[in-house]
Length: 272
Image (cartoon, rainbow, N blue to C red; front, side):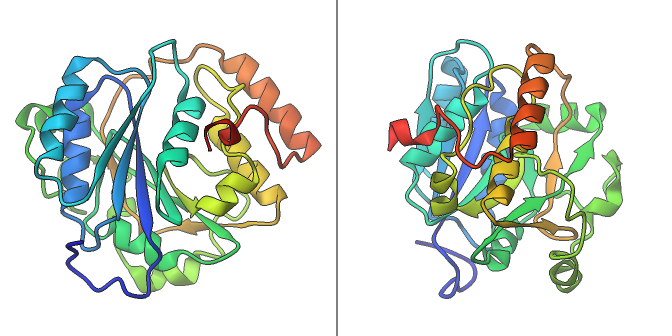
């Protein structure tokens, strides 16, 4: 496996990329993965029912991608991100999972940061730098991987684009300890994912599945650590299109958090 840096002391890692019918964004995301200072062992795409354009893109990128590119597709029956992620994790081979959304362009040290910060008994939450709609349109039309940095015009909350690993290492066990993680930039040990049975597939439609998963990890005794100034991802702008079941999902989430649940059903065990 070709990498730019020695990863002798790092765990084997799989990147899980969630996507749905946004091939231009997915292309930029995959290009940014291919340019990492430390490559993952594989990339597993969790596809919630995308059409032929996404399939063609993935098949084309497989031809020259530096690591195995695995496409896990399920039929489009609405927003079923929890189910799709469970299927993708079940197919993954790495001992450590880095979970992202397919509308992220990754800082070149993104994978290196997540793998080097990985610790037993912990899972990691990374942040993101939002891009304006204008910058997003420009990047998606060009289809070429951009060089985005702290001074790039069109960044929102650009301080999140500052990379400083030593400062991040100091802040990781201290910063935003009580804030629930979002799944668009998160990493964890696969064995810990399996121990809580992964994502709860009761969640269909937008919202709640990430907080429920993180809450069960914490209830099992895992520590959440926040990657501030490391694990940087640039988020391509989009409308909030999939808000169905929001109230139902969040009522279910609050009930689960009050009960301090660890296990969910249905979950990942049905695919293992």
